[in-house]
Length: 246
Ligand code: 3Y8
Ligand code: NAP
Image 1 (cartoon, rainbow, N blue to C red):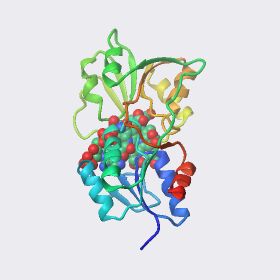
Image 2 (cartoon, rainbow, N blue to C red):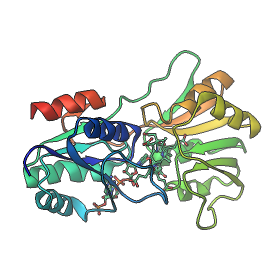
Image 3 (spheres, protein in one colour):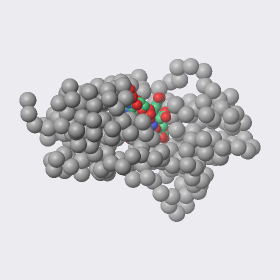
Image 4 (cartoon, rainbow, N blue to C red):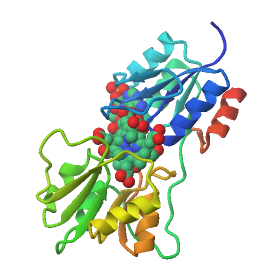
């Protein structure tokens, strides 16, 4: 079977949108997820779940599947898979584009304290007890155990499967995309006075920043990890144009 065969490394709103656009255009492809959550959102293209086994495994998967284009539409903080994608595209001689989203920037009325990484966010929480909304997901929670003095509100995609590493923590189980009204009500209900957020960009996680601005809450904003050089687009339409052009 000839014609394009796209592999989308997914797990974001933009990846889901691109899958829908490809399916609507009758273009063959697959969405790939790591398998981080119990019930991943359904996709408009066939889904494969789980690691590939490093860059070599990803390259082998693309050769075996006769993949013609690789789109890295993973989250800006998913640094390992993005590095693997650059190496695998070269190994398998498959063109690569990243479908990413511009970083958020503080606007009027925002009270952000930018930190370079998650360790910087932990250090920024030193000091007297506060009521902190930790909206950074499950994987970084153990790092915050060194700041047990706070009352934490955690937002997780799945209910925690083991004891939480934080002395005082309440869990809000919900996957995004979120709304400003919903996040504002959540913060008021829990008396939040500080929000910790990754600079994810995009629309799916932005609500908490708009709610923090409205409530005049401080935000500790974690900058993105450095990623290797690669072609980048910031919309599904631009990704479709890139595919058509290659
Ligand atoms: C498994 C796949 C879609 C995709 C939706 C986006 C928006 C909602 C906002 C907050 C922040 C957080 C977290 C978040 C958002 C979108 C997008 C985004 C942030 C799903 C999904 C998978 C994951 C993995 C999960 C991480 C966690 C991060 C929760 C699907 C729902 C905090 C990142 O329990 C865990 O292990 C969760 C792990 C990686 C970060 C972490 O370190 O814990 N995402 N999120 C992907 C896979 O298996 O490959 O089911 O849809 C996708 C989405 N999450 O189609 O609408 O595009 O960013 N995801 C962050 O940005 O800070 C929540 O609470 O305000
Ligand atoms: P990561 O640290 O960059 O990747 C760790 C390993 O997980 C990779 O080396 C790879 O394993 C596997 N992997 C990651 N993404 C994959 C994918 N889409 N398909 C197949 N395997 C994948 O990744 P992460 O930060 O844990 O993120 C995992 C997933 O959650 C990604 O799909 C990402 O888009 C999504 N997500 C992450 C965040 C976040 O805050 N990190 C937020 C929203 C969504 P092998 O080396 O074995 O191939």
